[in-house]
Image (cartoon, rainbow, N blue to C red; front, side, top):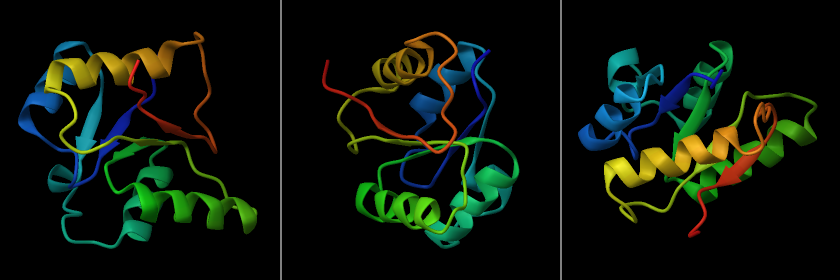
Length: 118
């Protein structure tokens, strides 16, 4: 079973949302959650409180937040970092699903992953 996803403002393209949902992935966007315009820390806290994996293109800030949380002994339910506008929605959805299922059952808790070029 794949984790639920939370797409921040940087990644909530209609094409990606439609591609993920068409594959049965449960997701929530910052707009749907009423979280638009909130800080990165707020976004990560929100995703964590609902046990969602956060997906963002804001690489530097979320890499920093990941390190700070782990250093403070706090946890999160996973962060996936993508390079903005590198792929279309369908291809990006396939890469996200591949990352979440390889190896099967991969636990994203306290992990930070980059969508690779492969």
